Length: 326
Image 1 (cartoon, helix red, strand yellow):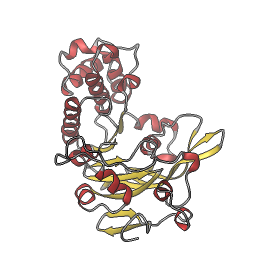
Image 2: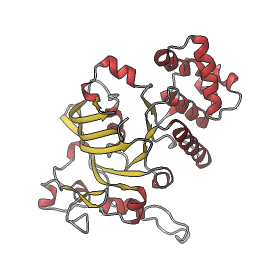
Image 3: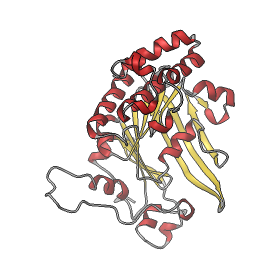
Image 4: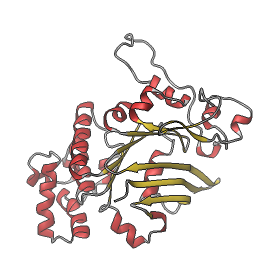
């Protein structure tokens, strides 16, 4: 295995719409080291999930299309892989934990059967062997009475249990890479902490790498080794997690960090927010898109800022108006 399990170079993903082909992911590049967790953070509409689904080519069809770049998984470009090879990789070498477990699970099949499918397909187990291992997996992810739960349907489980089932499915074949697309968004705080602890312990046990997509910078600080900050389809900042929180460079990153409630914040005080909203995909400018949000004018909206290293492993989209260093 190479040092980096995944290397994404200049990824470009678009959607064919009534208004023409619109680019949702615009030249995204980052790496995922072996055994590490890389967090992707940003507001809704910034391209996080589209980037993740582009890796395994699970974009909405026929609208979604990858128009450029490379996705190197263990040294081989997944964009050149055949459909058959992608079937082999998904669920086996790359596991995906989807955002909403109720839609990720099939409502008309029992939990045990859904867990068994990947074991039969990728590991060649018999139905009886797969069912037995499915029960063991349910036990591993902390579901009580796993024999009984394996015979139940998704609607009979709580939200936290369904999320544990989705994690069990993603980890069944001990993949090299796990893509966790906001795995705790719909859960309460206590269950969220349990799910994150579970994910970390299973990752450590299996030696997997993780891409964790979230809105929550608290989750990023607690679980990730490196952070990729996305805004409007681009990476605006990338750094080791401690460096990013200690020394943020881009105005958007600073805005995200400033919006986190703190213990010293006086009660009933207004929380800080970033003004305005992310532009619609059809309205993206070619230059600095955070300047577009801030209603700035001039050349900053025309020319895309360079992506440069400001300190060791700390990269930023160097718009003169959005960074101190320019």
